[in-house]
Length: 370
Image (cartoon, rainbow, N blue to C red; front, top):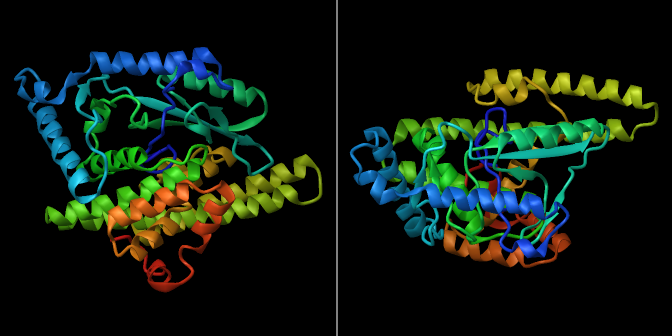
């Protein structure tokens, strides 16, 4: 999930598995799904229709202005990005008193670069466990740490039910700057357009590619040159960070596979994570943005690196597919939907080929998705 100082990327976003059919059960147990579904439905019931909130003079003007902006963003998403902006998504408003609407818990073995997954009905296996309540997320994280795992707990500014029930807008979403708010909406609506059950990295990278293209088009259409330049600079940093994290994931995996004692491998891990932080500081100085300080300068571990990779590592492949579609998002979504229908090995192989030839390959060197 998109958005994210001290989170899984700069803009956190998770797909909270609010179970579409609780009777299906799953490895997490029925109580987990009951809490998710019940908590989400309680929020939907408590939330007010956006139009009613906009017409209420007791609602602060700044909130009403942001709700009007969201209405514009939803229309833009449907018209220009071919995203399903109807069906109840973000048509109700809920004030959570500044609390994050969702939390994700990521975990990995301390000496193996492998993300733990939790399997659920409908959505398949996910590389995180989603919660609507911070206390429950942190309690679950403590249990995982007690098992000797690396753990990363990330707040999420938004979540998707994949169309099962309308997601409310929250005050925490409206507090984000316009480009980040647009990114959150476009990302979550993309999950409603295409979703491959059990393939978190595919789903999140696709949605991240959509949000990148969408925000660029939104800001360009509105003539927001300064905001567009800042967004481009921060997105360049995000992709540079993805490359940096990928490089150190490979180095860590090699260190974990090396002969020697567990103590020696842990020492190698600490040294590599210190080196990663040092490289980040040089990258920050070169690109002129500190957007990832909270993420990079505290608590790095396997789970945190894998969470970041989930959202960013496959983005260039999707952007090559978008360029190959001539920037036509309808064609792009259709192509991605075909990939989502493939078996996972064939899907991964198709993404690996995405940037190897033709116009997409040429564009890959330049970056960006139109």
